Amino acid sequence: MPRISQVKKSDIKSLILAGKSDRFIAASKKVGKGTVQRIRATVSAKYPAPQIGRPSVLTETEQHECVHSYTRGGITTNTGISRHMKSVHDVTVSRFTVARVLRRVGIHAIAKKEKPLLNKKHIRDRLAWANAHKDWTVDDWKRVIWSDETRINRIQSDGQLYSLYRDGEPLAKHHVKEVIKHGGGRIMIWGCMTWEGVGYMCKIEGNLNQELYLNILQDELCQTIDFFSFEPSQIMFQQDNDPKHTAHSVRAWLDRQPFSHIKDWPANSPDLNPIEHLWHRLKVRLGGYDDAPSGMQALWERVQNEWEKFTVEECRRLIESLPRRCQAVIKAKRKWTRY
Image (cartoon, rainbow, N blue to C red):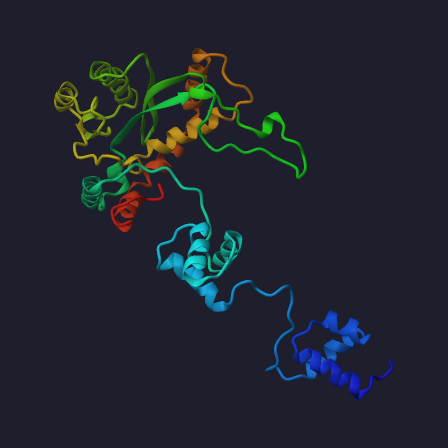
């Protein structure tokens, strides 16, 4: 291997001290990269490492300011931070650069989740309810029959659906979720779930009023209790605070029953009701069919079919989450939870 002159070696060291890369030095001095690397190994560690890639748009101080704009300044979007840097610090930076800076410290964008509006009373009631039930065990929650209503569109628009896709492939029918205005018609259903599995479910014909709701309780709810051979005195029924549920006739009927019912359910708290997750799973499964139902009766048949497929284990896993849900409400400072 030919030896290089001391002059060339000094030039290489100077380029190393200037922060140049091994590739740049080897090309400019017409030596191998191995030679440059050996010389670099003899240079003190205090010298700067070679510059790789283009320099950062933002200085380290400016990057810290981007992070502080979110953590302390309350700016919650990349675009907002970009505008803040321009107006306050006269630094022009794109929202994409801001996003890269934030990702390095574990801050990234997420899709906003739909959550119910909570006023001060809602927040106060949720915290009081969670504190009152924070010591309930799974054995306590096993006694509860959970109920709710939901709407299901014929042309499914609920739930996140996925499909395989190859880069560069044109969009095909299985890649898209086709939707039409008002969902192509919809049905409304009432259902309940228990520790032993899903209970009876029914399709609601017409508008749901207190008379129709009371008929549902007298029919589907009572049939559920009979089907599972529950001891009524050990059962507790849950419903939300919809005006039809809290009507005088409904309350009076519930008060006369051998089973008890939750009277202090906090308003705007679907995250505390595990049946909400069951509705979501039902809609995702309905959206997984290759074709839309031909009509409302076909949709209802699919709903019944998928409802019967829910297992006891699925219901129990949801109900077992109740202690964690109560703790989440308390920990979330009385506002929204991840449920």
